[in-house]
Length: 320
Image (cartoon, rainbow, N blue to C red):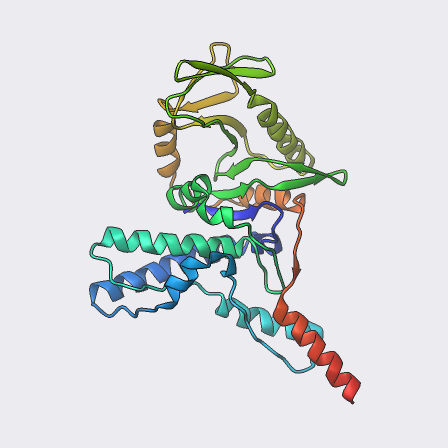
């Protein structure tokens, strides 16, 4: 599973320490899978009915953590709290029934891990953001997080701030040896898109023709912004551009040399190449992630339990 380090303008744990959380996630994912698999093999699974409720109400995925501390030095409190809250947020899969096969077990595990990733990409110890329900069912996002390798770092529809102006991006995938700027062009099955350098492309489907906005416009803007940021901060990673059309075809005879067309015929090969990239996380890859995260816009609010704690402290001081 690729790691979701930024989603929209939601607050992310990776923004706090991008050098720590990727390795922590990998370790956590491996440990919990081994425990779950062993319990399944030894017929010692523990079941919970709570998972059904969580599935029905995914918008409430962030569980309330009631941690009230006595008045202490602020730095000391933060250090102690970080350790305790991270333990509370540790991923522990819940099952409501026993899967018949290991394949089914793995899929259940990945589905719950997907929700856990959304939690990490929308909350920190002290803050959280409201996740739009659509992301829990976003097929493209789920594909990246469940089928791409663990060494990939994903920014999904991030909003970058350049000279105080917010700029909406599409998909930035940071692999160990390269960065991919990606845009999707998918409509009806087996639709054919005729590419050009004009503002509009032509789509042919079911014997009908329709104009669609040239996807290179947003893709070129995205890659140029990433390139400028990397140059300014001395990030040495090649930037690649691709248009993805998994269910249709793209005919672009005068395609720019630096553009990859990943349509129905080419996408499977590229996808398998990405899946079989087993290189570990690289320092330059993490530097690239941190650099981009530093430019991302974030909208969040104080977690409820911290507001309650602050209120409790104020009331105690007033009483005294």
